[in-house]
Length: 226
Image (cartoon, rainbow, N blue to C red; front, top):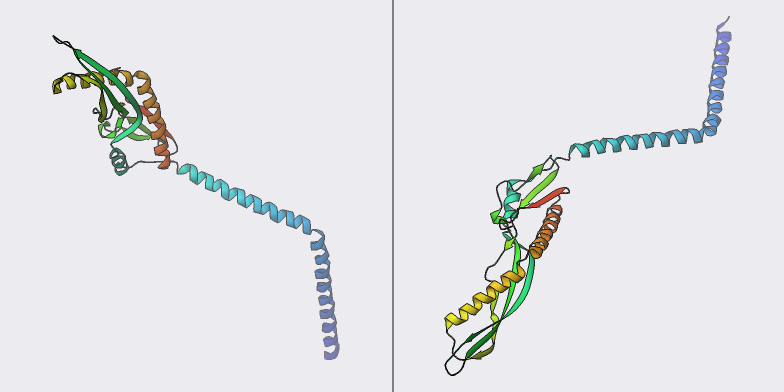
């Protein structure tokens, strides 16, 4: 075979090979078009699987980070609140006294107004009164409910309703003491103390949740006079 014939043979083979390749490419295009929905479905399925896998990884991380803590600084800041009122009761008492005289009697009637405030004093909390339980619960034991201010009679508002005769400061103090004891007996009842405790649990629980703690447990130290 001469050089010319060899060249023609090679050219013919190249043309035939390139023709076959072009034919294959042209055949693949309709095939891709025909299966386009299947390919699209496969891509969407792959995306959903990837999304679910990433989300499952995130859930594992969140569950692993459930450990909570409360620092000594935070506890000290809470304790610095001091007195916390959970119930106030307004009262008024009409107190009278009569002093017999030889010619006439002396009489004194006074009205006393007062507001009794019930709550806790966080400065009286016991050591470790607030701590973490099971790495996930903030537990707090509050001090007992008490009368926050023993000077609850408003002397500026209290006044004489009726006064006849001469009365010494000692006589007036006796009326004050009687009004004080009556207010205390009328307002410092088990029902009012229980209401103050319920308010304490509710408000302190809301306070801790506002600080970011989701699981809280509140207890109140029982009063010794019960």
